[in-house]
Length: 400
Image 1 (cartoon, rainbow, N blue to C red):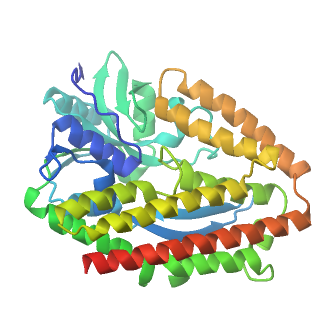
Image 2: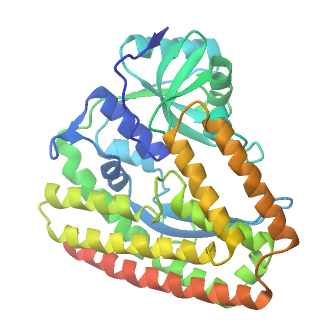
Image 3: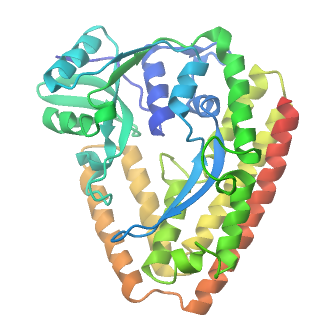
């Protein structure tokens, strides 16, 4: 049994790009254009970059779900690795003992391994509010010793799971059950084409028919759809119908914040800031300095997204402002890591449950105030639309 003694790769933030960044860094893979490890921002751009996607779902017995997409979700990890010419070694077994032997072999070779585990229900995230639904996501395993497994997952330090907990989380879903992967270094001859393809993905996801889903669910059409659903209460799936005053509205406002500010992110801004960092790297790699101005525009967009979430969970409404602060605190506690992470998150979730209950019995805004809130949200969504319309146009001009 082995712990990689020199493992020190804990920078990754998002599951797919973060785990890949951590693995590449641990292996010492260097981007020849920067002389540094491949940044997570670079991997975000290559994987397809950012997007605007609007979906909502309602299931009996559950809060309505506002699924706001901020980054490419069309096979981003496979796309990223393929574009970079990364050779993968994948081992998978239905039997836990064989799978653990595969893990041991990789660690004995001196390399960490990427494993897909149920991160929503691990001890280090504390009490879960997913109702037991698994969230299979990649983490980097850098040790297995004395009945404990050491993983890097979105925190600035590693988490330690018991072998039993790890094996259970590792085997939750058949498709990824006991899967392990290791990667060879990216092909340096493919970096420019990978960057270019990633940029075009972003342009097309904003402006063209998406690979899947309705055309009004992605890109600039999705912004206009959202505005309509906020301001036209009689429209099918309007916020008046899907997220009416009370706990359902709270759920929508909460999801708007988490999807743009905590979903695998250190800070808010709907992934626009890391994308701006990618564009600055791309400007140098492609010798296209105009991309720096586009990066400025996406940083502007990030600030406008933050204004949107501050309107939704406003400090002017103490209960909602407290919810926003607690959700941000959960993100920061997980990012810091440590042995008390799960307990701290459980305590925060307890207070969030109380806030949800209060919204169900005595929502802090009356109907007239709710309607005014929706109008303010719609106006801010239009601002974001306009900023990003200019940004994407500049992106297309710069790369074309």
